[in-house]
Image (cartoon, rainbow, N blue to C red; front, side, top):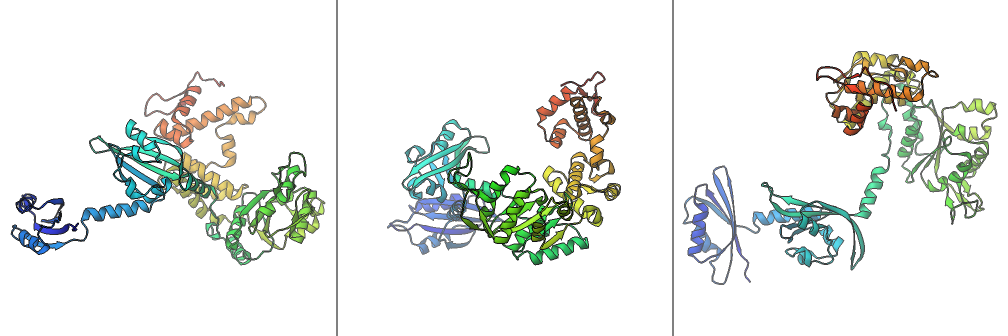
Length: 540
């Protein structure tokens, strides 16, 4: 069969162009397959497809015919109509998506399906387009149920095809036009294996680099320069510093800079029970002890592979385990509990502590030989009180993070508030500063955070609570209730609505209403402040 003629005609825009073209084609016995009109800047572009038969006119004859119409500016032959170009574009777009897509009209006839959906359902594009959902097999019923009930339908589904079993999550939604009429439905299909991979990727902590460290303090800059230099070596690194200075973050940055392919595995030596620490670190063989897992279990040194083992709070490691760790570091081998095989250890070891290991060695609380083995390369992170010049940069950076998290406009820290930050001794170091800034971001609705929003640890512990000093004379339940009520009043009076207060407190609207009722909080008018009812008494 001969291919149809596709032409593009350019006219000066006027009323009756389409009528004139249609009449001309009818008079010549020609059939118009499709016609598209696009008016722009006083001109009308008309794309037309004319059915070509054995008795049809050729291209030049058609050009001669169209030349008789008034206002014709130009005419050309087309290889592809604009509609075909759009269809090809949408097909390419849909095929490039990671989800499977199927859409149907109001009668359940398939009008769109991409290659991912074809692959999931083990179908060929040409065998699905234009067919009713009920005719296609194997086909999930999610989309058909959506069309019949005209409601969203979502669920997990297993399809058995010629290539095997495919498990996916399908979500179908009805489609309505601008007048609200039901015109069809669309189904999105996501392979559950890909969903799991995506969840694993999202749940994996983002890599920490030295670029994430904020500050211009010379001591910090020198430490980062030194750490970058030693990162690619396999030498043991010992990081010391007060609690909250960022020892683990520094260790993670060293791991990232090293380019090692294995994971970063942090181990808190103080948090692991003494009876479990060795089995976690070194693993065990089948039958090593009661309740031991069949076939045994690899320890964290094995699991780290070519990665990094971070032994945090190594000063809290039991003496017996210290001896075994020393052997691992010296021999680069580990032996599972109950086993005889020596397993090679490739992982790099980084240790950290906030304790004075030298003093612990003198008091026989830490092995001297292990102390010297782990102190090959030492990094001493200074406390925040020794790098006060970095507080403005760090505080503003933390504030931007929390503003983004809370969905608030960007805030700044006032001069008075900054002075209060400078004057504090920061026993909790960077961790404490971050907590103070988060508290300020939650409590302050002003663009400029004032000194009243900077609540330090000792202020939150006794903020507006003189009765805290009376512990021993007042029940804990009553103290906690009074403290909670003060927080509620502070938040309600710093926001414009209960719903906004609930958002700041990270409570549901209903939960906050229940607490208002529980503590009998009252606000007589929009202009007045929330207060405790005079009749209020603490109750459980």
